[in-house]
Amino acid sequence: MSASAMLMGVSKVDITPLEPIPLAGFGNRTGPYEAISSRLYLRANAFRQQVNGQDVTALVVEADIIWWGPERMAGIRGKLLDRFGIRPEHVILSASHTHGGPQTTTQFVDMLGLPDAGYMDQLEDWLLQAVGAAISTLEPVSIERGSGTCQVGINRRKWVNGAMVMAPNPDNYIDTNVEVFRFTAESGATKAVWMHYTCHPTVTNLNQVNSDYSGAAMAMLEQSIGGGTVVSFLQGCCGDTRPALFRDDKFYSGDAEDVRRLGRMLADAVTTVLGRPMKPVPPGKLGGRLIGVDLPYLSLPSEEEIAATENAEGLPGQWSVKLRRNPQLLTPSIPLQLSRLDIADGMSFIAMDGEMVLEYSEKVKRLSGGRALALGYSNGMIGYVPTAKQVEEGGYEGRDSSKLFMLPAVFDPRVETVIEQGIQELLQGTDHH
Image (cartoon, rainbow, N blue to C red):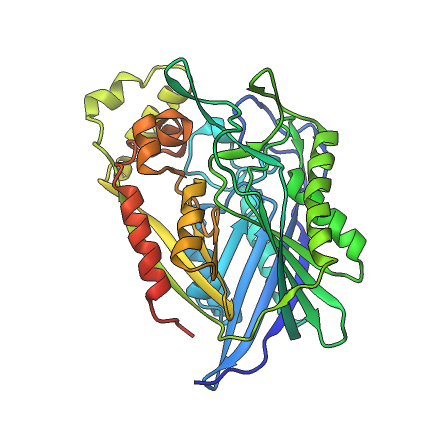
């Protein structure tokens, strides 16, 4: 069982819409975007290593989009395999989850953002272009890692007058950790930097194209490091964490200056880590594994219950109409994809295609002994995935958001156990090289 040196290639492609189209993530916006506050980018990180005499190629992509369209993932995986020989278990397509980009799926209700077919096709073309460009720059790299802290976010679940509401809750736990990885070429140049952090990129709800604090931090770091270094932001399980913009115990939407300010906080935290001695990451074997677990719903609605809200305003009506047109959604469970990618010794990522709440990130850290980090918003999207306690408590993540994602019902509290068992299976399973 032998492995050669790790090769890495990077690229960065502008994915800003070519013409005004609607944005995704906030129900208060109508019509196409009004301005471009900051441009959107896709950053591709390709890896190649000889493992047991065979070339293994892997891919980690970060895109300034809200999520990757679930209905397009099979086609994307097929193209990556056919054109570049990259197997599905070696692919992580991560979204920053900015709410300042276009809708990338047709699967959800219209109020989450109207999709533009032309943009979704163009995004795939840009992805393939970026992957080809990254592979063309493959060269040996060494890896270092370090940790810092940053306080951009705050927990957003709070009991108010006997109800679970979305409000700032400084007493609830958030993950302030910033995990930083530096990839250095043999020339001594910094090829790439990754920062893993956990907070919704929802600083502003203005109807403007905007890569949010995460995009601002990447741009600042790329400029300060220089030399063509590509910096990628890897979003954690931020389902119940949002930027700490609030007054009088209520959240407010910020502006471009707030985006820059919070982006600067994250960039400064990463710069501090890069300026200290970092720990070398020992070489390992490039490999991955992909599994699915079925998340059960509590109980499916009857035909009468669905029809009852068909003429209702807003979300109940949109959900009812779309569900009646798509009866195939009325299944007792929905699959959640769990993907593990091993890049080096003690450097693995567990990617999930849901809006995972923070507790699932903590499970990955605990079950892996700190050898793996969790990524939400990767390789598709099924919607919010709460804990058992959050299902019981209700609130946005626990119950209220399910119709936005065209889920036929709320989740059974058993989903937490199912996911924990899936994470354990993924961590214990044999790598596919």
